[in-house]
Length: 265
Length: 265
Image (cartoon, one colour):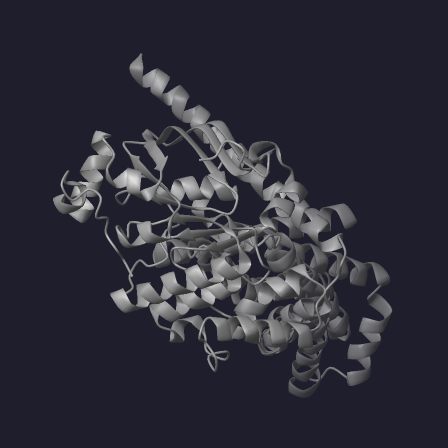
């Protein structure tokens, strides 16, 4: 990480427990602007909890979460809204508004947060839906869509107001290989186009490495990394090493083949 | 000794739960009212909610009003006939309806029809992270979800109560005049002479208060479903919380009915 890069999100010694269960035990992380940071880890380790702290949906028991330099715990409602207006979020279960059709779901941020008239909204929504390959699906309701389509609608909604930071919570969970590749392609294309900072929580290893600038592992309530994907795969840290071995097999970290990193596309 | 400390700890926990729960309910109302009065104002969501809470409750209100008026006609005639003063039937029916039965029964019917639906809707939105999604999109859920319902209830309830009263008086007329031998002139003359402005005023105040209670309690319980002590998870959590909301709102209506009557008498 270059020392002069602007840090857009920073977690500093964040602790969080639910009842007697310690989920985050002194987690620190910096997300530089314009980069893609991936947080990996086994299920139930607290990946989504870290994301929810960044979004201000959860408050740390101790420690600080700073977004654009603001400590989220100190922000009032208006400041929080100001910060969140630069966010786009793709939730794990997509969280589409199930009583609205695809068109209204994607149009909602424009309707509620801008003064655009219906004509402007229509052209913006159609443009985003076309980008996601969802033409002709405007009138369908979320319950009538497949998992992959829901994710694409969610992504269209998240990108509607050209956010500075986009959070992805398990963007490919429950999708087959083709569908998840499609999501990754869309992610790659939209990031090139809109140049947003991305924070991805995923266990889709090693595919996700190809897209990331930094990878961090959450294990035993602590964060290990962030490291560049190449360094991550060859790390000496026993927990990272165990994770890499478990998810990718020994071939990727063997000494002789260490330089031949896994190609995803 | 140990059981005593456990008892004290339990007492403390219960007290804290009680105050935090009712404090949260109070804050919910204040936040909703602020969200309601803060510009910009949007008309369409309120009209949609008036249709849902008001217009769609019309049939049930008309039927309940009609049969309540008819029962009052029957019972009132039976009682007044003992004293030879059936001429007061119109006044008795009208005063009972306007001051008491109209607002209370209309409110109970609307709680059963719309309050339960509001609570379930909020609960499902909370469970499926749709409320979190709104917050992350910098859309204030109080403004977007609660405020239109609150305003719609404040507009609809007095109108529904008026309709209930009028239909009820007509029901009493059907029984008194057509089934028994009370003169139509006596029925309306008695009403005209004995119903005063204070009666109508009390009915209006009650209808506003009950409308507020209905939306407040049912939406707050659904909104805070995830904080329910016995767990608000899944379909069962939503159904349990909806039942609680309906019971709590109905009891609150009866308690406030007494309080408003006592204050305004």
